Amino acid sequence: MGILSYIFGALLILISIAIIIVVILQQGNQKGVGVISGGADTFFSKNKSRSIDAFLSRWTKAFAAGFVLFVILLNAFAYFNVA
Image (cartoon, rainbow, N blue to C red):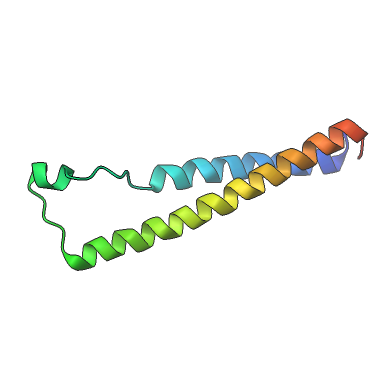
């Protein structure tokens, strides 16, 4: 294995950790829980959470695409004995 494989492997690990962190930061879609607990959401807090969730959702998709790309690259390197 060459240095390029180690670099892409390290990037794969970093992207994997980033995916885990971004997914953990997202809120669950449990509707009706606020009604049971008595918490009333205002209009602004609902929009704030939606924008944060949309932001995290976009980053999850970007990290997932990067993860797939690096897995394909590492497999291609291993198959063709590159680097």
